Length: 276
Image (cartoon, rainbow, N blue to C red; front, side, top):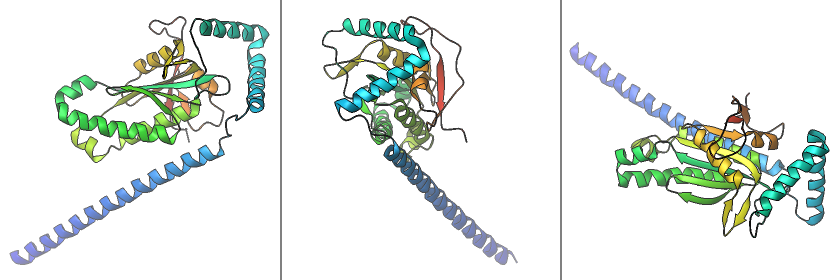
């Protein structure tokens, strides 16, 4: 009797192991299918997005449409005041030029990111493992930045500064990065979870010697400073530049708050996948 029970237990253990292995394979297949669907959706959205203005006539038409929209929303007085402020800011910069990543209205969406508590993580892991984690982190970020046609301006340790032509592309890239990091690679699972903070802002910037400068760059960095690990925050300006059918949602607006070193008060939003 004991022998029979032992054989049955062994058979049952084999069945359980086989079922666990089958479930893991299915989970891997489902994850692969989800990534494929996400890639197809991103490619479709890119393909359906109207192409940027390619010549002087198209750019002029785009400017006329945006100007008419601003006049309708702000009135003539508001439009003149905004233009004077923009011109004054640009006049203070030598050799100012609109970057090639700029939208037709001269704005660029700036994206800053870094790893939360990176110094402590480095100390806990040691330099050798930390370098490997950074490589895995960089691979995730660069993959999504390329997918959504962003341009890495510069990096510093675990920090990225990225420029996008439009606000939705920056937001979708950021949300996709956070999704990827919630399903980390084997390397990241082995060495420890990383939580990335991302801040996004849209505005006119100054390009000089391959870098980006100006108040709007500082504002994007301040928005990133407010984020917690795993969170994407954006400014009101990003919200203003998103279309009604954008494939992201903005939730939980803050009360108007001050940002260190910047005049005025700002509303900051949390960027999340579209609400079903």
